[in-house]
Length: 184
Image 1 (cartoon, rainbow, N blue to C red):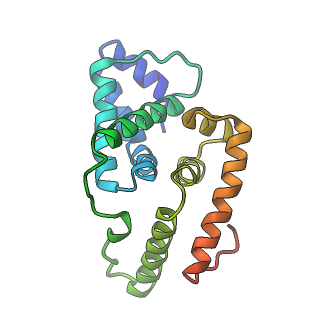
Image 2 (image 1 turned 60 degrees about the horizontal axis):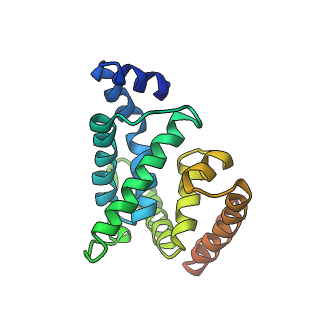
């Protein structure tokens, strides 16, 4: 992954390729994080697009108080919260109803992996929204505790406690479905 900060500075200076690099490098992780907030992957893609549109149109100042990725995810979080406020009465397809087709190469392994993924998504959906967010940031976004705290507007201690409770809650939800995982 390239340095997002240098790409953003180039973009602000007029180089459109800088924004293309940012989108290419951060899009997938941002969508996954936003999905942990909204519970809907389709809306998460739309919200991620809105986040990048904000960068393009508003060109907010990156002050360097955090990493570029943390700053970008914070913008994405604010965009997601605003979106959810505007669309709170809308009924959407739940995340656990979305699944991908198994590959033809190894159908049995693909089906088992898909079942585990669906089980994980169902279990995540039953968690408190803050639990989903902290797990997504820490394990899917590879943020450390300090960066996670900055994005979630919490202290590092609160994030540590929240992560501990979230892992335990996820473990209990997975065990209800008969899933056993040694590393959780």
